[in-house]
Length: 234
Image (tube, rainbow, N blue to C red):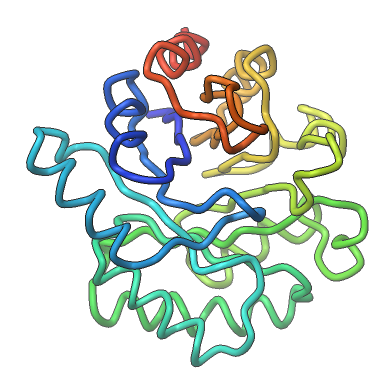
């Protein structure tokens, strides 16, 4: 089942996303590529969604774009898992394929030791030209998720301040080979239909779901806009 993920700053936006038909509320602080939030914000969103009848809405979050070392990455992943995240994204910026596999295997094994298969683990890789010096998502991504036994792969953009989105770095046909693909990176409404058609699992948006009264990703998520994005799946 294909799903729309909407990145949200807190419960009010999570409710707007849920009422608009999004199936994943992604808790973040949208000042960087993934936007790491506080654990108490994750907990608040999960608890309030449950209380208000949205238990079926998955809560995702992240532990940052860069991982300083394996031990702290594992601690961070467990921290957000215990805070209520159903889906944990972990950024692998500036990691080679070899180091990404080494880190990813340890992180996935750690979370599954505590939670089994209850939590989904999604490595996040970046398609910006300068970061492809380390890791080439379109070449190395499939090998990575097979090796670490992750639940999918998020292909994203790292620098969201230069006006370039995912499809500025690759063609839709380049993405067809990915099984369990998650896509993000300044994706616009008029790009969604074509991306759904290639079978992508999850498309992640923030700015496209916002009423633009704030700068870009700092607008406010609105259910009417989310509903229009969900409608592109048809």
